[in-house]
Image (tube, rainbow, N blue to C red; front, top):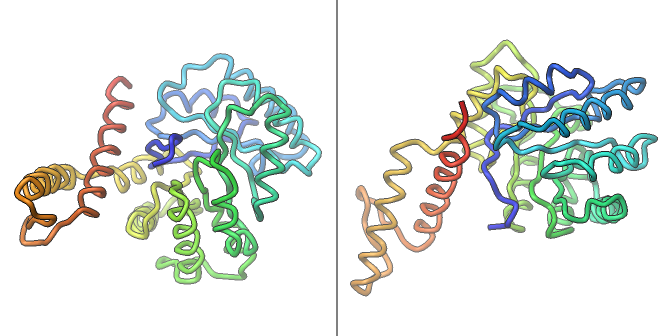
Length: 293
């Protein structure tokens, strides 16, 4: 497991052009706040948004929430100024938009290092057909990559695909990126859900993402947080089963066997690793949120 791993059940994009949104983030039960300087900010408000963000970060008080800044692309007129500002601020990671190659990652890391951000990990956003096709190259570009974040809205648009409940047009791309992330021991988070009123379809999307193998879901509204957290939080019965698997396999190993039977199912070493991961996520969530109001 990479050192940058942490629960990322819910990642909420926060437009930095609205100060009250930044303030509200301190009170939300969200694992990760992605302070957005890119898509949600109009060109004429980019500097204002950056100033709002640096002021909010100086004030702090975000608790255990992961603080990530999505900058503008480095080849834009705002990207370098974004880096200069955020690399001096108290954040946990920088999110790089529209990553399409190893070279994109390496160039961004060089720019971050020059701006004083050599200590910061990055999240890479895959949101184009070319990015999907090069997902393995991107995921293996640097040990400083903490997470892959899917940008499914742009990807759907550029594929000329339709948004459906079952997400059939996206399944290959999603699974391909999951494989690339897991091949490099990376966390990966699903993209956003645009329908803010249909929580039934959003809940379905969260559970589908979980079952596909994602670690969490990107969000665009606080009302979505509870559904994402619920979908990606280990259930009490899953936690209890994980403990039984570990205990049963440990006992079997002491007796000279590499397998055991739990609830009528054969379990072996790979199931112990999965059980340990379940308990690790459970413990991290409990540790983070036990002190929050």
